[in-house]
Image 1: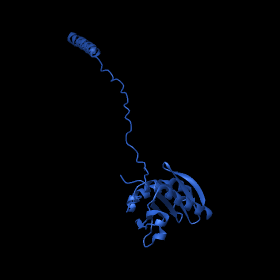
Image 2: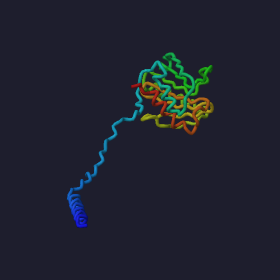
Image 3: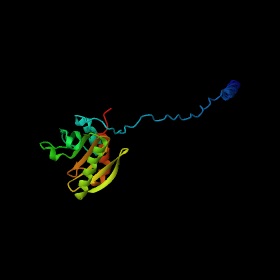
Length: 205
């Protein structure tokens, strides 16, 4: 019986000693709070920079199909077709191209949904005059005329009965983006046509 009491006593001492040792072990401290590191966003957004550039010889160099689809918000049918115009010294035109987008299968140029035309002239004054004359002719025909921003430039939105177009000039060049067959709704004209015009006057990187 005495042995049992002695064992219990020893066990109690051992437990007490163990508790004391546990209490003496220092607890690890929580790490200091981390200060969030703010890294500036350095990726530059690709904004079309319009320039008075030489006429391209491929519609992919005017507005690529992928860009056209992204800007319009849907896939335009068919492959773009290019028509290279002739020089017209009588009006000071030194070159011209037209790109036809959205031609359905087995259809022709008149069925295109969007047409982008670029032209070059002998000087800036001649280019501006050609745009002004075109706008005035549309005004006389009853079209609605509105000045809009095209990047850092100005352009003119012409809303006619059969089509809507955005026309403008930059240096010796002129640009026109035509919306045909009501492909782009009237409510989205200002959101889409100026962007296409910017791309048409932006050289590929």
